[in-house]
Image (cartoon, rainbow, N blue to C red; front, side):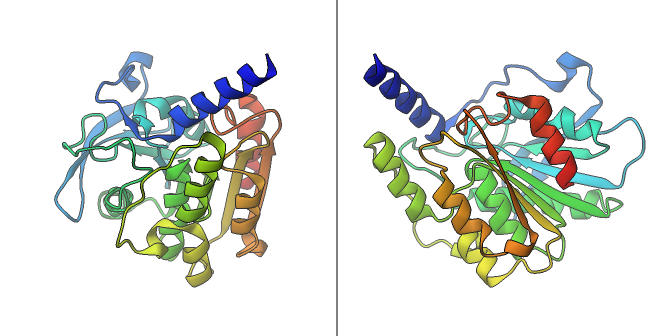
Length: 271
């Protein structure tokens, strides 16, 4: 029985780590009567991304950009977005190319990440800087690969970004590739010829990021991929501005759902 449970967890863990784009939104913010705007973001290579801009009840000059983990689409982030709205933030969610209603892009599920996703997050930041320029504070939040992109790109653009919240980030792509192989026996493909500073938190934080106001790393104690070793490897680089929150009895799939109140209590305290 124990072996069966372990295998079940590993299979489901792998399913959530593999790229798995959904073109259909299971729900939209309008289904909940939320105050939001549907927008289109243009990337530097002229790709159109679908995005939702959520607005708090009162005028706010704070913005947070949410990046997903590559499984599903931005509809999975609606509940997270509403929690940030309740903290007084404007919230921007967006879909990577090939996801949701963003432009077509061929996704091979054998890949862990595509180098083009960096252009997508940078495009979201550029949109905020150009069209939401009244927002004086811009923070980033991401899960899984979106967490690591948020740290890496946030460090590179640290003059424009204030704080970063990373839920289950990898340290380097080699580290996550090895961790997935160890946990699931599966080899994932990685992009070639990419800028390490834009994809790998360890390298980006070593090179830049000194002017960030804070980094908050969330991870599950039971996670077999985004594990304690990875978190420590990231956290020690900018130790003076980095804090961590380990969620007991959770992995990267359940860090939020296992105790939603405590999750945002920790996030609020960090912000």
